Length: 165
Image (cartoon, rainbow, N blue to C red; front, side, top):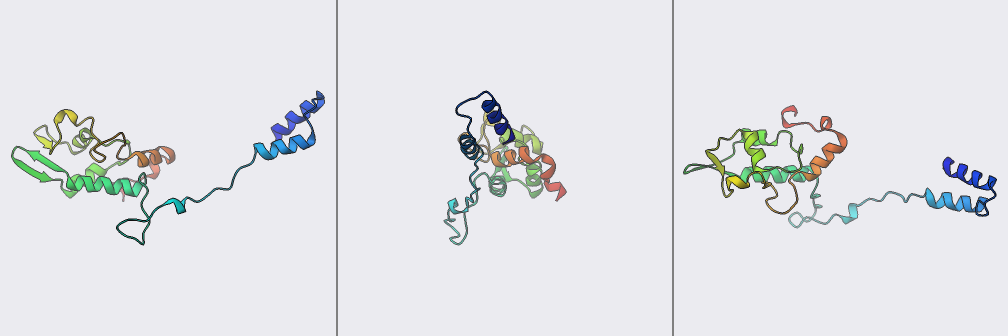
């Protein structure tokens, strides 16, 4: 505001017709007005399954983590004619550093789990592993978009990994 006052004083010295005290007050009131912050709680709908609960935000850390863990739990690995689900320790390894990247592809999961080429993901062609986000499965969205954004804003040091819990 002091800069605006200095500009008006300079304009008054130059005898500008519009550099009046009344105009300065109106300008300052308009230029530096901020509406009070509003709560968005009223915009969150009810959960269709637990009617007394509110929905979880789609880009919230807890929801993204929940959805990723659900997909990991339902993921099927194929080796020859044998199929299997991920073990609890494999799921923990997969979730380490969750949100470091917004997208969580099958290729990233393969690398984290150190899976050999002889093991494939059920229903996923080897050539598609680098492109497909295994959590979202379709569209341009990413599995950890909200978590990744949060981590980029507050820093990775404030988001503990599973091994630190």
